[in-house]
Image (tube, rainbow, N blue to C red):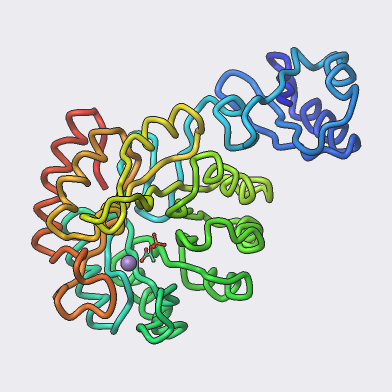
Length: 338
Ligand code: PEP
Ligand code: MN
């Protein structure tokens, strides 16, 4: 239910109402809007709560939330959410660009890439230190050493560090080095991990599972929001279909569709979405045209030598070209890239 407070309700009234909702065994999420404050009351449905709350003097009305995802829903919060960290702004007229290698391979590789993507206009730095690989024999990442390299690159460039966390037991360690915790596609429905990053209280980039429906994707985000962490970015990275010409199939309609359903910002990963470097720049431009709030792009100084995902990685030069086109598209929509 959404408890809509009367215009001019004081903070004290809002807090009192939130307590009342909690006493009913529901969770209260206070959402301060530009016009008025609403409280999303979520939890297992019982009888009579709606009438009880509606009869309170400071309450204007109580409306049911129809979507299964309650806090993520536009019904709960009509204004879009903007997620920021250091120079990175995702949403609110900014198309944030997170770029970097698939995996951190060495200090030299990462720092060189960070400087190149920064000068092309990126505001976030990606790089996996813990890699979820299909084969147990493939490069698994530099682990904590990789995190240290990422943190050093942030010091040198000011870019916000986005890196993947694979298990709840690592959240505390990752939080020391990273600015945004990435939940990979394979872990989208790892509910304990979602709760753990929710508790970490820092921005989370949640990737769509390759076979997850949009409702499942939003319910995964809801696990994070339910822990009181509202800084969630949704990332479409392609889904598995019958098609084999690209690594995954990248549905760009996800962007406007999610914008209708949720206030959370939506970014596109055209690297995993296509698996082919030459397809990345046109799909990035198309994603910006579709209204995305950000991009995540793999860039490697020498893609042919990359320890993971070389085939889909752009050279720094190709990335800089991509940025020029994307900037033109963003500006045509009245937005800023980077
Ligand atoms: C990645 O970002 O390198 C990655 C492993 O992506 P995904 O989880 O989308 O496969
Ligand atoms: Mn990758």
